[in-house]
Length: 413
Image (cartoon, rainbow, N blue to C red; front, side, top):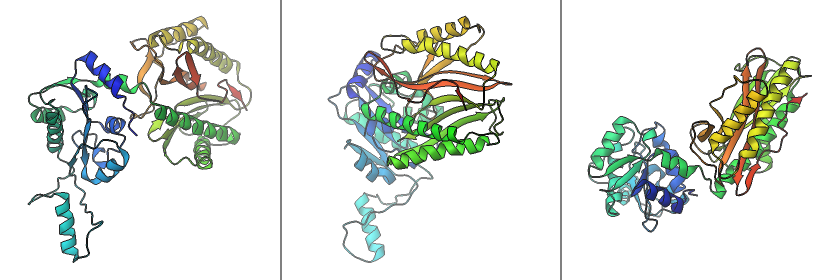
């Protein structure tokens, strides 16, 4: 299912003076088309696939698709105007064809693909050919001489040069920020993916907490979390769990991936599950036994800061204001030197667990309904351990909804 909102995309393009978007990254391709980008995008080079989104919503979208994933594309996407870019993998389709000698059968299958005489496959894929196919689709829409938005953030210099050759008369402009702003408002299905992801992650946290005991290793705790998350996915028959990640630490060094639990240790749990590529992000802190006075003092400050920023997470509030309120609360709690670049971020199907926009002092983003954010107040102190409060929130028309259900305070076990 495609998540791109054509109306919102058109409004953003009109404001930026763009005639179309040419989306080349695998994430943006899937976002716009609803179909997998395919294996040819594994090298993070552009030109294997492309999605074309005209600014005029009355003009049909189009895509460049690799031949290996043509069938998957047609099964997944509502887009019908596509061009096929051959990659290195040899293919053939004999379905529905009459029985004949193998050589003739395969030859007929290739002919049905429209192979020209002398056809040869590229080493991986031919980026120039992919760009030319995209240029042809733009030309059919009268856009080949227009102002075309490209995500420069994900385009190498060499690929930009090839694209410029394919579109010599177009004005290629950076639309990285526009695409980020388009993606920051989630569709109902995206919100559903993120909701399922955080529910699975929390089931894993419950399993991890039940495993905590003196002498248990960090790796055993991480394994318990993953087992619990996967078990919940199985219980609910979740078929689109596409990954898990964890940053679990034990003891006084918050960055270690080793160690075993000792009495008084902090256990920092920062974890996420991916549903159809959409990642959750949740952080919780546990202490084995009774927290020390220092642990309690530091964590209480984090709770105070979290409580100061949380009410501001609602439509119309600047993300920079949330950062300012959270930072000021840490200062008033006794730690004026505490500084953090951001107190949270968007969630989606980006490359990592953190997606733009950020709850930072530099942000110019105003919160809008439909955004899904992680709001966090972490602290990592060698000699004490890692501490984190992090929840996943949906910005609603009148405020926010916390998608997490587990308490976020310091848990003593």
